[in-house]
Image 1 (cartoon, rainbow, N blue to C red):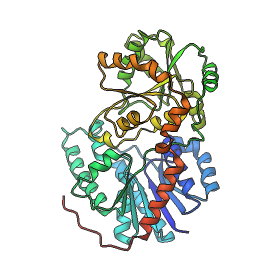
Image 2 (tube, rainbow, N blue to C red):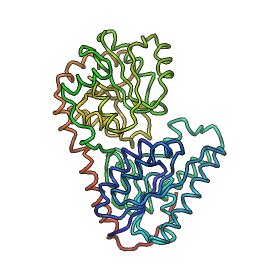
Image 3 (cartoon, helix red, strand yellow):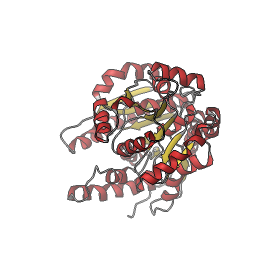
Amino acid sequence: MKKVLFISYDGLTDPLGQSQILPYISGLSSNFKFTILSCEKKARFEQNNSIIKKICEESGIAWEYTFFRTSPPILAKYMDLYEMKRKASDLFQREQFDMIHCRSYIPMDIGLYLKKRYGVKLLFDMRGFWVDERVDGGLWNMKNPFYQIAFKTYKKKEAEYIKNADHIVSLTNVAKGEIQKWSSYNKQGISVIPCSVDFSVFSLNDQYDKLVAKKKLDYSSSDFVVGYLGSLGTWYLFDEMLLFFKELKKVYANAKFLFITPDKPEVILAAAKEKGLDTSDFSIFYARKRAEVAEKIKASDISLVFIKKCYSKMASSPTKLGELLALGVPVICNEGVGDVNEIITNAKGGLLLQGFSEKDFKEVIAQIPSVLKLKPEEIRSSNEGYYNLTKSIAEYSSIYNKVMSIKDTHIPSVVV
């Protein structure tokens, strides 16, 4: 059985690790022998490590990890990278892996080091335009000379990653087209695999399930529940969602806003109060397990996915969008993010918001009755081919076999 080292800077004990890493690797583990190297946050590790260890043991996955640092500022990331690189090198010398699967940019730095040193095959699973996300998300202030240098440095690294990968995985078709225009693109294989969904966990939300979920969360059957799933922050437009809800209340007086989020309730309620909203219309819950997330969000009549529109987001595949469509919950999304336009336009499942003005809100709110007529099974079935986890696992398996069959080639130099 071929050996694969999967490197992730995200922890397996993070929510993302449980939804977007382990389901794939568990599915692939019947055909490939995996070692996962991750970087774990200590608080989440202490809370969830027994769950993750059990999943790994059942799938025959070896799990190695380092711990995420937050200090000293800036240097912490370099210390994380150094420790992960050292551990990956030790693992390679012991296991002699046939391929390295790198999830995003920091792991790719480690993978490229191993390729140059040992000649191992290398899969670059981009997960987005990481360097541009730092700038677009305001994490790197380009007025600061330090971040100007960081941007130039990592853009050069990005070009090297693209040039030297044996295969590339993009989350969106829009991003794939953009990458193929880059001078660093070496005309190697590039596949599109979105953030997929386990349809067995996010099962069909029929009318009975919705009523049961509403009752458990103390809603009446007549309440019009607007759902939001996931964290708030950098990319998710919280203020715009509150303003939309304020406009919605003018038409749907019985509207309630449901948040399934790890964010603090007091922060959400304070922002709602500031916007002149009645906080009694807000319900906020945290769900630790994926099944619990699915169960609670089923109370939604409709759900919001508002994401900051910018260059880097063309490479984004919102996990929550696939999960909601798998349930059969109609969504309202803003246009211009990843493949969202195509998904919403070509498949039944929701409405596209052109902007965030009062006029834009009113136009979409007027269309809500039409999407409420959609049957949950129609929404689910029309999106299953795109988001299905089983299909994505099969695509990864095919990519692995192709990459491992590539004959050894010279590592090209990079000109930026």
